[in-house]
Figure 1 (tube, helix red, strand yellow):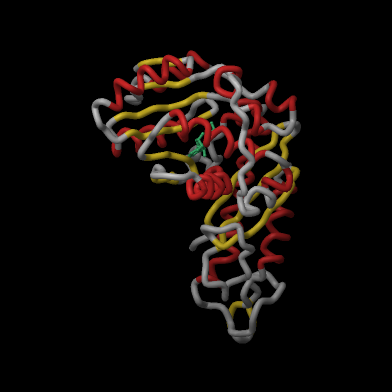
Figure 2: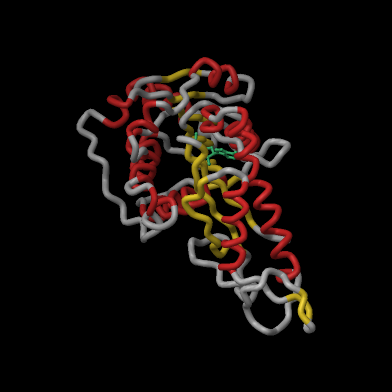
Amino acid sequence: MQIVRTLAHLRQVLDDLNSKGASLGFVPTMGALHAGHLALVEEARAQTGVVICSIFVNPLQFNRAEDLARYPRHEEEDLALLKPAGVDLVFMPEVGDLLGGGWEPPMYDLGGLDTVLEGAWRPGHFQGVAQVVGRLLDLIPCTDLYMGLKDYQQCLVVQRLLDLRPGQQPVLHRRPTVRDAMGLALSSRNLLLSAEDLERARGIARTWRWMKEALAPSLSGAASPMGAASTMGAASPMGVVPLSPSALIEGGLHRLEQEGLRPEYLSLVRDGTLDPWSGPADYGLPRALFAGWLGSVRLIDNELLAP
Ligand code: AMP
């Protein structure tokens, strides 16, 4: 496994790799690696001839300086995880090298995907993501790009970035979220949580379970033809009253608060989009998106609420 820290060295190593003509899988990360990242690497390893992983804490995507300052950095442990995973090259550039040298971050038209939900709460975040992913893709001519659905909105933004870029672009592979045994989505930011807050964070998964159960009768076709109602799954003489999106969100927010979280948002979108999910009569399935706080740590998660 080669460890490359400068752009000059990267160019030189890529020349060697390119001459082998293999497909190239790329897994961009911000380090503090866990099994979620390794699942991306594993898929890249299984599907492509050469696997590159980058570790770069991208300052352009942080809208709060203190968040950037305390983002976990575990270089040695990360390298120890990547080596047995079969990564060929780890790219870990310095900020000044990757983003300096006269490089000007382009402003992308992300079609509004960057200004709602996460984008509304973290202004500029997705421009920063797109700029650095674009920069990395300029340097690393991969055939396959691997990202996690843990960052669902980011996957949509990066697909948009690929659509905007000229020429042949890599295929974006979106992997399901890796969770611990209690359903907590693995995240580098979990390292910043106390034991009590980790337990509270598992309340997100409990809320997903509750939302799925509340919605199941409506989605399984047992719903009455009465249209959306605000009663949650209540039995009626005609069967089960379909759950309205607003009732489901209200119930979910209540549970998250009871679990000790401070939600910023809980939203339902039609899966594959950021369009609001309009209820069981909608042709798509609902995906729930959450962001919220435990103490000074901000967590995000999302889940498809399919039966
Ligand atoms: P990050 O280091 O947090 O920027 O994440 C790097 C990549 O790993 C992104 O594509 C994330 O969506 C993905 N990722 C992070 N956590 C998980 C997880 N629990 N399961 C699957 N993928 C993840």
